[in-house]
Image (cartoon, rainbow, N blue to C red; front, top):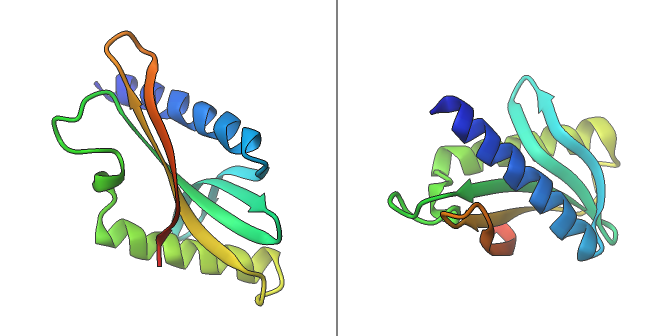
Length: 121
């Protein structure tokens, strides 16, 4: 089961990167890690640094992909973003946290991919 989750997650992250590129985002880093945790994608959208959490689901039995982000995860994403900005950018750089929600059908094809901008504030 863990291997299947990892495969689905990796598939979703690849799909999200391509989706973001088509929307004009520049991918700066993937799977950025620090002591506070990990961000799936760090991208640039115009002058804004965007931290992207990718959520991929092959079943909606436990809710939509975006519903799976807990308050604790949101708080961790904010701390990660602040840490990244302090270490990599001018601390006055605009930034936001987006979510890419992906649903996969039984055939393995994407049935929904949605960018939710400013998903965490």
